[in-house]
Amino acid sequence: MHWLPWSTLASRKEKGGLGYRDLHMFNLAMLGRQAWRMLQNPESLCARLQKARYWPNGELLQLQERPGISYTWRSIVRGIRALEKGLIWRMGNG
Image (cartoon, rainbow, N blue to C red):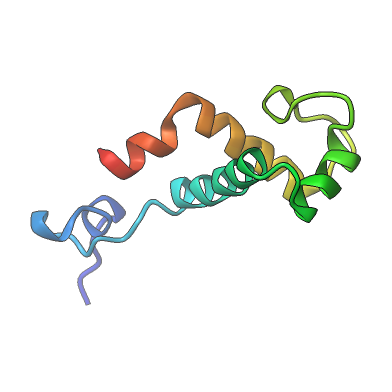
């Protein structure tokens, strides 16, 4: 069996790869999507529950990671940062 480097496997099929996604960037995109849903629909049950727990007096986009938050919420905050930087847009259109 001949092993190939990840860079080859992750390249587009048109370029001879298998088209695997960068899983880290894909995960950030999905986390950013959850944040986007809360921004677009702030009256949803999920958004109201998260707001009551994690940002009762502020805005979602001004959140910072802090000690004591759950792993899931910390990951969503990282997705928000990626969304702000435009990393998610570049990933899908690059």
